[in-house]
Length: 168
Image (cartoon, rainbow, N blue to C red):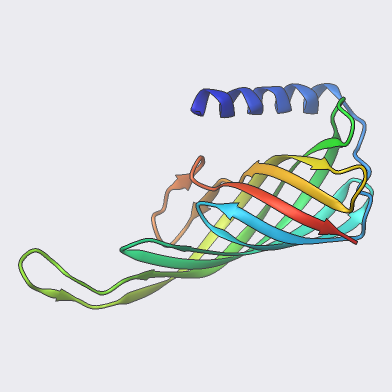
């Protein structure tokens, strides 16, 4: 899996360095669902034929933690040599909440619920396919981020996502 992701990044970098043409975003707005380690809703607003801003509201939960995050991204869109395919990259930031759930440890001590602020800088790179006969697009991306307050680490492969958007 990591080898495939690395190859996608290398291909995207080669196309980015060798191609100056920009993708034509065909709609002013797109709203949809994002699935991955953190799932949620997303909205994209087109600023220019090759640029857009995107907002993502995502939630993530497991047995010990839960979080929600509001992400804002500025994106550049580029054409790919395949019909109806484009790729994009961008940057932005996010703010959210990270909650450690209450639990009882092995010694019988109750550990209470604890919440903390989440603040990060984010990047994104992905590929999008627009259905030629419907106002629908499908995208696959990776959204690495650096969390300042929680982990103070860079998350690269955890935030892989798949989105389905309705364009209008």
